[in-house]
Amino acid sequence: MRILGLDVGDKKIGVSLSDPTFLIAQGLKLYRRSSLEEDLREFKRIIEEHEVGEIVVGLPRNLNGTIGTRAQTVMGFADRIRESLAIPVTLWDERFSTNEAHRVFDMADVCHKKRKPYLDIMASQIILQGYLDARNAR
Image (cartoon, rainbow, N blue to C red):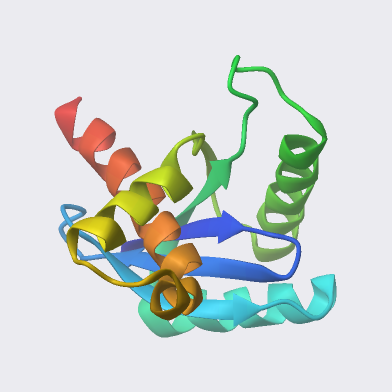
């Protein structure tokens, strides 16, 4: 079994996957959204192909911790995954995941133009790794 991490945007979803021991998150792909039905079909395929038992979805809270419009949209998407695919879905605070992804690319000296296609994947990986670290600390 593995855990899938998602950084959900309006047009793209960054997708990452844990290793079977739940220690390491690795970027998997950038999924370009078309429709909710197509999104659900794609994630069903990924779940079956990689033997996923849980999904972690980044929750974009406001900086003060409140739930805004964007977070409500993501929560609705997470509910649809949970209902349609019958898999546990955990919401995980992602307030600084994109900033952290930029820092990783800065340290690697990757220019902004070259990092753009990978930013959402890296953000999903950071979200999932944070969840795995907290889960393993328990």
